[in-house]
Amino acid sequence: MEIKRLHVGKTLSEVAIHNGTVYLAGQIAEDVGQDITGQTREVLGHIDRLLAEAGSDKSRILMCQIFLSDLKNFSEMNAVWNEWVAEGNSPPRATVEAKLAKPEWLVEMVVTAAQAE
Figure (cartoon, rainbow, N blue to C red):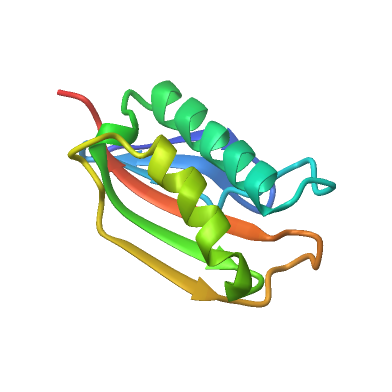
């Protein structure tokens, strides 16, 4: 079975698609001057864009892993998430505190989704 990769770089691909499943690389905010609310909105925007490009959308997310640099930001991140998530399609999710690769990153999200039929 074919594996299709999108936005392939030397270190990683932003998307891999195999057998109708879409795997996104960890998504982070490019504008790191934002607070957790702004970074979360930007990350979710990246997820929307990449899923659409891969033939999917947020209602088809199978699993989301969320990494926060500080759990004190959980409530603010979750408020943005709850506004964004497709009603009736809240996916299984894990949220943990982690030391992210760059200290200015406040949130990173990793998504797996099904392609539209």
